[in-house]
Length: 112
View 1 (spheres, rainbow, N blue to C red):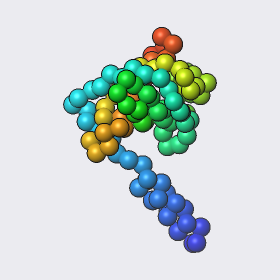
View 2 (cartoon, rainbow, N blue to C red; view 1 turned 90 degrees about the vertical axis):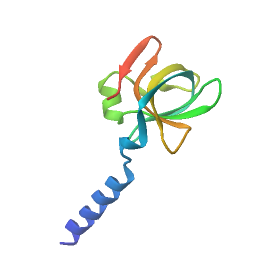
View 3 (cartoon, rainbow, N blue to C red; view 1 turned 135 degrees about the vertical axis):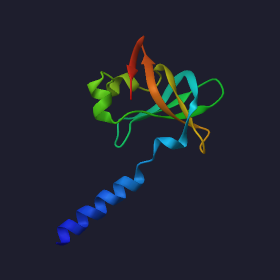
């Protein structure tokens, strides 16, 4: 019984930590170009910090399993790599966006 209660609590905690996509403005797509300063191939979503001409963005990617399945390896997200990202800005965090696709080295990867 304790095991079931602990699993329920764990799943509820993970679900509350996952953000919904409604916090991103899908009515106004953004196209960014810049250089990767940092990346993470982590759960629940990978990310890159993309330095553009005017600021550094936190770009939320797909989960690592999807990145890998679609051919976007951790090595491709290396610091100093040029990238283009199409996505949507967070309504409450102006430095954050959710990526729909990312292009690195001429290869575009669909993330959703």
